[in-house]
Image (cartoon, rainbow, N blue to C red; front, side):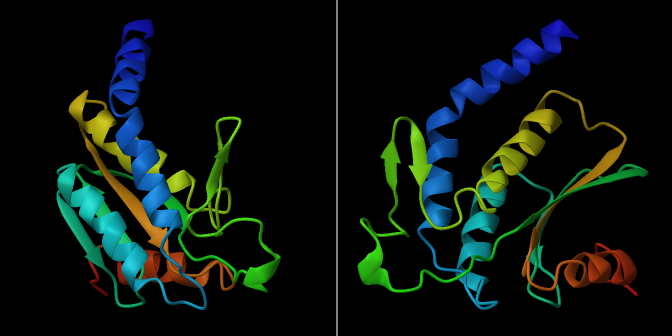
Length: 165
């Protein structure tokens, strides 16, 4: 197992700058009040670049990426909307451009919850490349709205990942 962990660490380190840039780019895209199309498109572009087998929006506007078609299913869920910024003049920096301070990115959505998306997307691609997803169907699910948490994943579960009833 330690060899697998070392391979994962090596691949993550090799993608470090791309992962950071991806995170900064999705944080820079406003995604408030259920208006997540542009951030979903950016996430889908990254999944396409990484060779996901399927990349699309579902009927609610959630972003879905799939790797594999095995009998065991695993879903990584992250909401990709954010709350507003309030009065922009009260910010010391542009909340969408963000700032890096002491190695930390401060930007709208960086910790709640766009920050989990790059790790999930790259982690799935790396797991696939290392053969760790053999026998699995693995999904990244970019949930469209935290405020109604449960409705979007419920649609994913009830309608089916491929949009079939």
